[in-house]
Length: 106
Image (tube, rainbow, N blue to C red):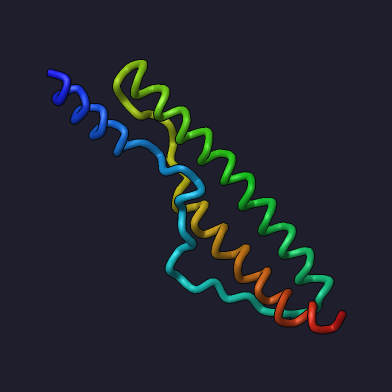
């Protein structure tokens, strides 16, 4: 009986939202066009804000799913993994562009 309970819990938790720290950047290339260091810096901040917002939503979904699985047996929180992955990709591209083009000038 104990084994059945553990197997059931593992299957239900497998359907939970992924913790945001385990989300990888998307495989698609995000092309960033460099214009100026000022614009690039603003784009890095905008991409970071978007990433952090989605990170928080995904973290809430992850913890909410774990709670709901133990309360009612179902993970019901919305998953933002794909959006988070794209935002991380965008942030990495803008930050890399800034490091390559602007930090050399300092």
